[in-house]
Image (cartoon, rainbow, N blue to C red; front, side, top):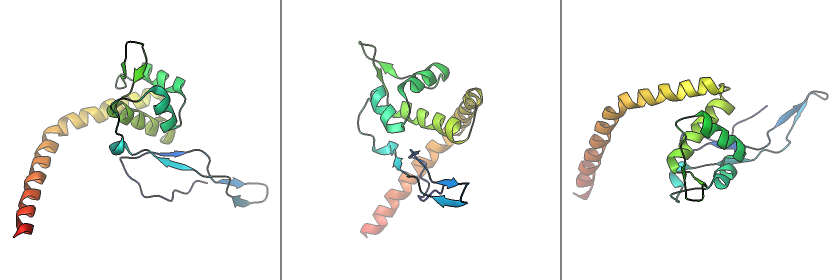
Length: 150
């Protein structure tokens, strides 16, 4: 039985290494070990991350990341002259999305591909509205700043 003890933050992904389990023989719950690591995408500072760094961050194998790169067209890390993958913040966000769909929500690879494409289509339609709302927010913050200084 997994008990989530943290508040959901859409910019982070919890990585669970071991979780609380139930002992069916005795009927008692006992804590095996629970370790949760939050990946805060907004706080990533480097321009590029190696596949090893992303693998460690996410708790996924490098081979799984390479597999997902081949399966999902949205995941396109750059490669340097040596051929090493260089993941950007955007690539890590895509990996987080894939991870949530496949590992947490139980989507198949094909289902996750379809869902990602549908989400991108919805975001494309909403982009002008989001842009307008961000501009309105900026203007409101400027007005608030002017009011606060008086």
